[in-house]
Length: 323
Ligand SMILES: NC(=O)c1ccc[n+]([C@@H]2O[C@H](COP(=O)([O-])OP(=O)(O)OC[C@H]3O[C@@H](n4cnc5c(N)ncnc54)[C@H](O)[C@@H]3O)[C@@H](O)[C@H]2O)c1
Image (spheres, helix red, strand yellow):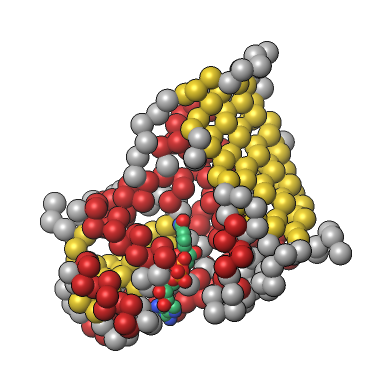
């Protein structure tokens, strides 16, 4: 199938990484890039052998691009996705779909009204690690799920200064919660569904000066009778795992350390092998297929992406349980 010509908005940390994956997918040809930092865009354009434009409007005037990948900070997702959709181009929008449910719903609506596809970049559900977990749980390996616990933390808070959008709650609604814990919540949604009945939050800010809290602990009752415990922090060591406790055993799924099972009655864990994949390339290929082969559905669905942000908002609205 022919490659699809695309544009990219936002060439920061993730936008640059993802552009490399876009090129690796061999499905898209990046024609134009735009970043508010024009000098940076010019440097990156040399590497990617593409052109730069001076604004989003200039980007969208180009009739030869069929879709746009958006990796701008969360606060611009609504503005950028709206412009791209109104220009009749398909939208790949990085997670979170938006900082709040209202904006998320507006994005979904404008894409629908203009008949363009909307893919939201929840890359973690595309890890083969979690696809394997979903398959094993589906096959009944650990029985019924009773409890899940997960931790997604990175000590990047120490380098978040006032120049960063991640510093402000109006630009990054919930700090580590909307940036990192959302990956765990979305992955649980992918593996076994996440219909939230009850949620309790404890959040803390002891070290950082950021407007957002730096650490979040969540206790969630979901799917009527299951318990989920999530921790996410900008000040503790890098962690990225979800453990699934079932009636017949436990699956320990750690992005850095692999997949293990401990069966009920056993004390030792056994390793489960699986083939590692390139999750971001897979989500990009899925977006390509959703454009080329109209019937391929996007994963996560737009509804799921909205539900992720809706849950974050619900958590943030809760009173802090600590002083
Ligand atoms: N899926 C993941 O694992 C993952 C990881 C990191 C970031 N992200 C998401 O990617 C997005 C970008 O995050 P990041 O870490 O790359 O941030 P970043 O601050 O490193 O980069 C943002 C880039 O956008 C540019 N920019 C700012 N305002 C702009 C505007 N109005 N128009 C065009 N460009 C503008 C900045 O100059 C910068 O180059 C966020 O939505 C974030 O949630 C996702």
